[in-house]
Length: 434
Image (tube, rainbow, N blue to C red; front, side):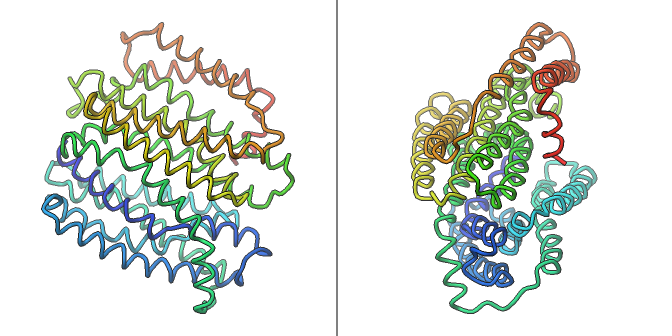
């Protein structure tokens, strides 16, 4: 567990610096390429200008990270962080915004599945013992770098690059700065918990906390994918009611997938962790399951943040209110992590994350709702009924059956319930997912 926790802390350490490289270029680039008529510079100069700026910022970020590693506090993580430093370069060369602006996310997702599949096989074959933590760390981070280089090759061929001028670089930097503040705050909200857990119990506590966290982060990929798909479409929609309905369907699609996970985690979370990570979580009691349940609920809150904040407020150029909401949420989350964490341990830190995300989601909705004249929450009631039906079945079954049988029973119940409740929407759901 200590080795696993060390890898997760090293990844979180690097993650703190990556927003300073990614900055706001993803949001700016998606809109500039998706709406070429509004781009402040020629469309073929957008990607190279962003690449130059990100490479410069990656050098600065890498230098600052190296200075932090000189502190005695981080001695045990130096080797891991150095081995994972290729993430600084891959972040600088990331061209996801081109896929978003040109609506070629299918290609990007194919790259992602291919690279993650290769590295998963590598983990299975090469990571056998606690001393293999360095291999595990590299193989965990490598898919992101592989996706970046595959996408870079693809986008250069699809959108030929032209050399940007100094004036072009200045324009892109200025235009991307409001987006950049949001990106930095967003990542801090997603990562602050690991640092409080490490302060409370060291790398072993991080290992205990990171199991549920990694499961939830894997599930949260669904929310990220749905958000990216709808964002790439919303860039080109201007009519208010069509825009509003598209946002509504974005939330519906993500919530259909993630809401049952958040509910089911409370019924099967501890047994699932003990089954999947037998040597680590066997005999640990219900605490890891509670952490999984709390963090899973936080993913549902992320659906609202992505839709109302990183879709509506970004596209409607309301970045200042969004940044204030994020900052307040981050400060509240850190304050609660200190008070709840020292009192309730990892459960308290997880609760602080959930409260912060719920607050940010509510704040984003209150600011965004004036841009959504046709938005309705009616779908949430039907999802709630389906989740209650699933929860009732799981409660009735109890712990007497295997965790996989209980998950299957819950999934079938939820599938039947949503099939009936959303029978008129399924054709559109399937079309959107395709």
